[in-house]
Length: 384
Ligand SMILES: Nc1ncnc2c1ncn2[C@@H]1O[C@H](COP(=O)(O)OP(=O)(O)O)[C@@H](O)[C@H]1O
Ligand SMILES: [Mg+2]
Image (cartoon, rainbow, N blue to C red; front, side, top):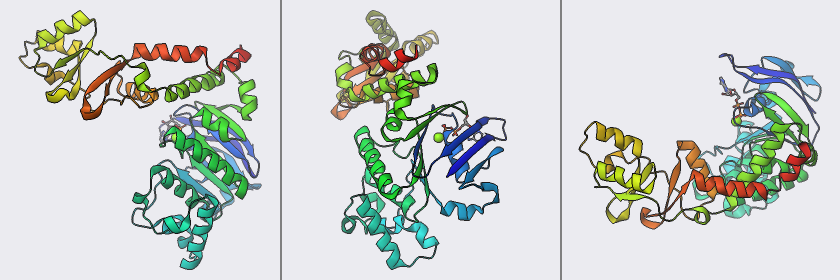
């Protein structure tokens, strides 16, 4: 029903975001569009609802070229769900779900009926939720409402851009299963963007994997696992599995419990000497009541000493707000370290008291173990 032929997008700054994208999507199919960040997934999706105009090639809906279709009419046939749910805060759940219907001039009674019907479909008690406001719902519930809202005007195709990206793993799995059930019940064609291979493997009829704007492989989950098209696909499957395992291990299980730590009023020379003795290149700094203040790097302290600064170590404590809890998934530690370019991250208990530290070294050990026991190993071998 949806045909992409030689579709391409080059942004005005010269970025080739999508290059020669070809795909035939059948009615009722759930396609997962996957690949690393920046590979062109969102750009592809937005060319389907014409939020972005292609620079080459075409999209066709039931054989009709997009270019000859009225964009407003087209969007009527599409639903769109994004990660930033975007529920309107001062409208009730019923009003949020049926917002598009209101724009289409459907009367209030009918809108409410439709909202109830959709709630029932998603297994949510309508009488309990319809008159509440978004802020009274959890993140997962709000995301469910976001999905229902995209279904309200009964579109033929639903476009979803990392819709469950902000949810915790358990909630994600629930919503993935729910989406799959919903799709079977309402027979919609769904294009689902994700960067999570487990998510794609779980829900997709076919997976389209992209890299740097190009499609690398189109296959069913089973085919892709058995026969990854190349090293990139095999690695993508494998690496993602490792990250998944890291999300099942708690920080507590991998942290070191005697981090190098000094009080905020420790002198610079004294702190540097302490780091030398402990053979570390940064030190955690604690204030009154052992509350974590930040981490100071030997490099910075050394420089300050050379400049004959008189301050205390607390002046060089950075990233005071970057930490994980002992019961967080180890995955969070990885994310934070990558995001802030850190070699270690403190683990804080109640009252922001330091209870341990996770270092790159410990993580490398954990991931190495995970690799050797990884379920992805056969897929990697099959490719070799
Ligand atoms: N408006 C824009 N102008 C210029 N480049 C863009 C724009 N939007 C996205 N890009 C670039 O196009 C590429 C693909 O982006 P995107 O489709 O958002 O990727 P994904 O959704 O897979 O992360 C990236 O290199 C991104 O930086
Ligand atoms: Mg994107």
